[in-house]
Figure 1 (cartoon, rainbow, N blue to C red):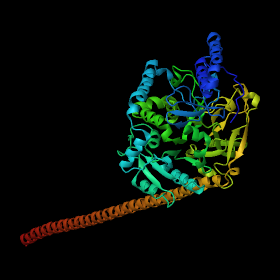
Figure 2: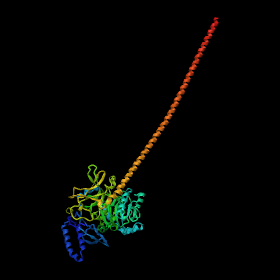
Figure 3: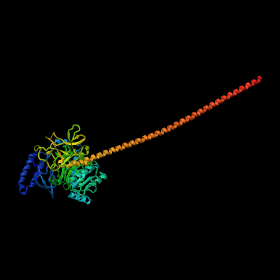
Figure 4: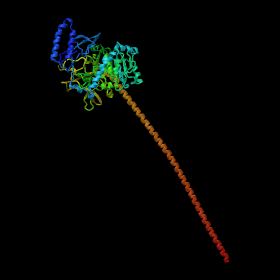
Length: 610
């Protein structure tokens, strides 16, 4: 932990008063009263001269500074290092500054939103709703122990004292990520029970059976549904993207201490040791940063000072449900229906930031990992320039000491796997910022927020490398008064098996599937071509047959015509011959008659002559 270096920002009077009263509580009875006069003089100075900047809000966070006891119902500050003991809390108090927001916060926004549509009245009403929930409805809901007994009575796992892993699966096409993630957990030594959460109608029967088959003798895998009526608080699927499965799974899971993982978030090493770290033991929740910051003009800051901090990335969560029960129920309340989910997600980019704001609103401690998320990916020659370029396709998250631990492969799904092989692995290097010099860090490092400090001037952006959509760090330009440079870290130095495992289990599998798909496509096209040719041949044969039949009929008709013509010709010739014979006979008859008549006349003439 970084030691307090002195306040370079000023603390508001209200927070100083709280700190002063707590310091008094540290003193024994003999020393307390003599020092009260000094405290009163100090507070009088603050009241009269007010050397404090009211735009800055102090945050109480975990460092080895000092211990004292306060009532558990206190809502002042954001307490780190909390250890519950009856009605009091043991905490370690630092003096840490968080904020204020900078102008550069606004260019971290990665989504264009019409914030002006969120009116002050609307925001005030929403805030009043969850405040009323905490004051009126929350006290009537069952405690963590009561909820555990209710679920156990319904035949569900009794969550008290159990550790486990919760993974959300909302798409049948993501089963390969689930299978890979569980394989890596087991291979790297994590044997915790796993609950896979979905809505009852999201998965088909085949995938449901495959999930159940992932169980082993030493590690159980259970498929559970958020809308199961046996849950402590069932949650319906509704409309939208279904991100609220996370809140439902965390709330109703059968564990007291849980690791939540997105289905495409993989462990690079066994993460169980984080349960035993002081940061988790003292706070009960570990959260991880995202690439972005919540801009100053976001409705979330309406009515309160903007805090300079990174947004939360909810692909991995460590939560003690007993310690965080109030915040978990508030998270459930904020996810209770489609309309409210949409209202929040439109300016909070889904569910992710509802975790940090639910914990903050409920006054429940959490520890924000102090190492900024880094892009992990590969280096590839640019097809246009030939220059070797980095392409980040995953979010690399770290542990409490800054060591690489998780890889969220959120851009891996859109990556062309055909470019990868054992010499060009998809997740092989991580680009990280080089640390700032101590003289460039503006004051103490925060503990419960990832703010300014060592992340000063950091920024991430999207780039295109060949046909890939990649993430990379902005470097070599001045931001917030500093110029940041980067370095590459080989993942193989931490776990030489991980890059190869990811390739063989996902990229190579996808490549094999691609080849199978291509072969099947070629075979299908071949069969379709053969079928088309067969149909064409059949059509041609039919046409030829029809033509042949038509020709035969035509030939027959022609023969009949010719025969008819011959018959008619013969008949005509016969008639002509008959006519000629008749005419000849008639002529001969007439000539014979004429001759006979002439002979008769000649004979008569002879007779008369005689």
